[in-house]
Length: 437
Image 1 (cartoon, one colour):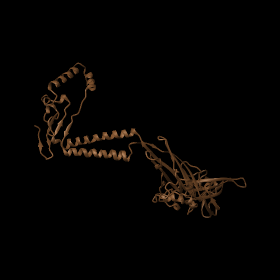
Image 2 (tube, rainbow, N blue to C red):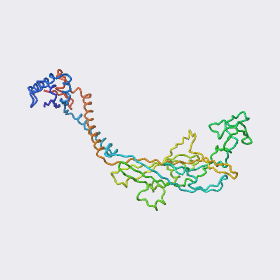
Image 3 (tube, rainbow, N blue to C red):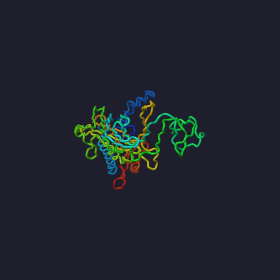
Image 4 (tube, rainbow, N blue to C red):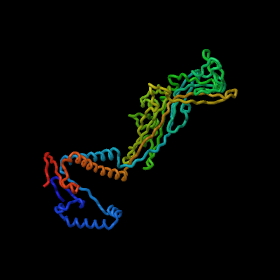
């Protein structure tokens, strides 16, 4: 080993070491080197070119040169980069991202039960009581439920001929303005080719349809079932992590039957109560139930299960968040809300099939369940430790790049005929050059 100023070299590639240098290396001699090179040359000469390459590839072993640079600046830079890498591996990978755990996604099922009673008194229906069988349509949905809040009612419809609802395409002056068997995109029936009076001032094309046709140009305001904001829904959510064989439900073990009868979800007072007031759900999302009830909408109830199974299972609890999914754009309010049509069929006293058509507006609540569970596993732990150790090599690479580009004037070739670095000059910390003897 030869020490030159501040640079310590460990040359292991004997072909690259000149003869006059081997004399200065302890335990090495030029005769030993010549013997080794002669032996290798004999092997290479006695084999074909291809075999020699294969032999060299299998049996030769190369080692890099190692240089010890005694510079406080370079050494400090190397340690700073290593500390940053350690902070990333420990702080981000292991502490924040829990790189020592294996993870699994949640498998979930949801069942729902809505309760509440409302009273209406209108000219079409009179005094009427509405219970859950009347306003929850359909009775069951997958991870969702719909509550009717507004209604346009067209009673006693029968199939026959009647004037179409007036609009730009149906208003007429004579039969020439109507086309036989024509069906428009928004038609209520098939045109007969006749122009008939809709009322005293307007004529429209006659259609074969359920008569009288529905008139939905005016939506009731305030909403027909505005009392729906006081309805409640019980959400029962069961989750399972198959990889860890862990299951739980949102009705926690400390919730009693008596508590369940009286509690209503509140973010501060009752954060784990599974019973929700509909009006509070809408308000939680920053919306007004009275405004939303007129045209309807879609709400999302998000249930998040993020569990650390290395801790007690009692810490694995649901977190609820609510938001509106059909975001209203007030500057582009085209086709807002949520509605559909539903009919109840019957036969009158003359055995004629009739129906009551209902255009129903309401709020659909979607239950969205998310979650992951983590538990310690040796395999991801070792993988992340190995990755962290490998990243520490980046510090050496970065320092080599910086030394080459920023301090390359400190080192130069002296023995050009061997095409490798033999002697160095280093710019010391005091800013002066020092040369090798």
